[in-house]
Each structure stands twice: as C-alpha cells, then as structure tokens.
Length: 470
Image: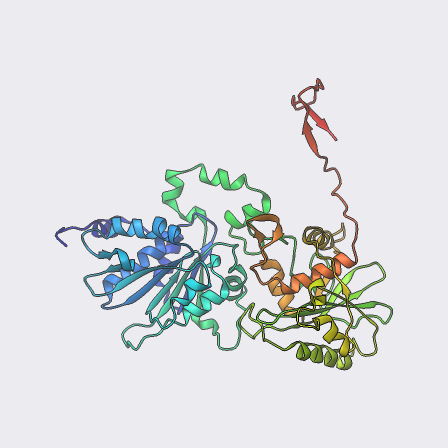
C-alpha cells in the first residue's frame, strides 16, 4: 500500500459513466440486470460497481463470476490488478482481491456441473453473473442460493450483465424482459436496465467503425447484437419461432395460439421421449386435413422450477400417467392415437424394454426417425410462414414447456447443423419424431437464386462480375 495515489483513485475522479451505467449503479433492487446490445459498457459497469461496494462497506463478501477461467482472467482479473494496484491486495491462489475495508471480491467461474458444486455452502453478500446468459439456469439458481447474510447494514443483491443468446437466454428473458414470475418471485425485486452500444461514448470515439461491423451482420444476429432484441439471437436454432399474444386468436404470424377442441375428423398423434434423471416428454398432436400439426397437450416429467431435472418416475409410473390422461381428457377419450417414439425405447438391456412396459398399458408406438439433421429441417419447413402468415405447425398456449424450451435451443458448437444435446431438448425431440413421421416438402422463397462464380465465363453482366446464375 506504499502508493499514496493508487490508480483507482485517479480513475474514479476522471471516469464519466453513461446515463444507463449510472442507473445501474443506483438501482437498489435485489436483482439488477444490465443487458441488451453488445458494446454497451456492461462489463466495465459491473466491475466498477463491485469495486465501489468493496470500498464503501466493511467486510463485504463479493463473488464475481464468468463462464470460463480464461474469460475471467482476461476480462476482469487483469483489469482489476491494474486498477487496484497499490490499493487492494490480490491473492493469486485464491483469485481474491482484499480491500483495506476488509471486503473481498472473489473471482469465480462455472463452466460445468463440477465447477458449480464448488460453491456449495459458501456465503456471499453480493453475487455478479457477468455475461449471465452464458450460464445454465440451474447453475444460476444454485449459486444464487449462496446469497445470504446476517448483516443489518447491507441488503444482499445479485447483479447480471447479459446479451441475448446463450444457454441462459430463456431464464433471463423470462425474469427481466417478459417479467413472468413464478411462485416465490416478486416483481418488485427485479430491475432491468437496457444497454445500447450508442450509450458507450468511449467505444464510439475509439472505434467508430464498430457500428458498421454490427450493421453488416445478418439481420437476425444484427437485431440481437446491435439493437438488443431478445426475441432473436445468435446461435438460436429456430429463430423463426414466434409467440405473439396479439395474434393468438387470428393465428397469423405466430406459432402459439389459443386452444380449441380439435374436430372429430382430425387424427391424434402421441410422441414420446423417455427420461429418468432427465425429464421424460409426451406430446399430443392434432393433424388437420392439410397436414398441419397442432400441439394440443403435453406431459412433461420435469421437477417444477428446476429446468432439465427429471422427476425420476419408474417406467410403469410414466405409462400409468399416460394411460390416465388418455382415459380422462376429453380430447383423447376414445380416440385412436398413433404413437411415435425414440427407437431407444425398444432396447431390452434388462430383459424388458420401455416399449414392452408401454404395451402392458395399451400404449403403442412406431419407431421414430433418429436421423437428426433431416428431422430438424422438417421442423424448419413447418415453422415457415406462408404469404398469409400461416405456418404448418402450431402450439396451443397451454403447452408451456414446449414454448419455453424451443426458442432457447442452440446449435452444437461441434456439429453446426445440429441442436446442442446438452440443452433442455426433450420436448424438441418429441416434435422431431412427429415431424419426421409426417414430412412435408420445402418451398424455396421466390426469386432467390444460388450464384456461382465461373472463372471461364465471359458473360458481361450488369454488375460487371462474372457470375453463373443457376
């Protein structure tokens, strides 16, 4: 502490936060999210807020989290070591900054379940999830349980910085954008500060071309990165999915609609994906005379408020529940129901297969198509709107978990055309089986022609480029 004027003091005297950053600094809610477009100055604001808290209060225990250790080191540990030199002591083996006030900022990361379990039993007055949408919902919930204190002079709080996209997108969007709260969650405890790149005057001055680079991105990604649109984001598999309550009744340009009793002439299908530690999923579909599918009901074996956590039903209990539903629900009673399921349920490693158990209860299936990429393409074909805004697949708004999980599915980094199987994809799998069992043809958009550069062509095209139009 030999420096009389540590760098942090000069920075605090000269820094000029934006209006949005000041709003973030001043919010007194228990849960404060600062998010939206990229480049809005969110990471700096989070880092500075934690430093200010550690300087103002004695003996605060603060946790700052990033998804991976390299990100944590590059984006926060190194900048803080530079800013806090001569003021706060950095203990490298604990990745902890210790302040003269006795407050500590612990630098943590969480890239898998094992990392998450390391926070079991720890206690913090403040937690900050930096790039929160990169964390799985169950990790956020688990680590958030470490927010507890017996202090009377300080109210514990959690900060989130976030961009659209990532495995935690749906969770953050539900809380801070849609403001759709579950039992035990209070709207008064949550605040959202939108971030826009235009707010970041430092970035605008130092790199004025940054906006141009964002504007050059594909439309869907541009909406997320530049405009902070939470409905479409980078890496989303089914970015064409739309849930528009204003059109639940007329069914135009929305995939989610108001429920209705399916006509007697429509066929009913059952699609099944088995699970134990992970959720099992059963979806029921009505098919109209044009081959259009309507998800009318779903039975999802997931622990309430614990996404992707199975209820651990025995196989018999799953089929007892399916049998009960089909014997009692007015849309299913007496119907001939055509079933399709994951081919894995026919495996009999213990002498009796899941399919055999289902047959004891009169629940029958055909083997579903397990080729993932073609079935994913079938979903894309059905989600596409025609010229009147009508798709080939709808979801009744009571099918809440399909509506929740479908838009948050991300591409697998190792298999760019496939869905990341580490995500909550069980209801998606049931849809994949039914769509593959009832394939439709793709229709290319009008006037879209593939182009190929032909180095031997001498065609003098209007744009002066030698292209062969197919």
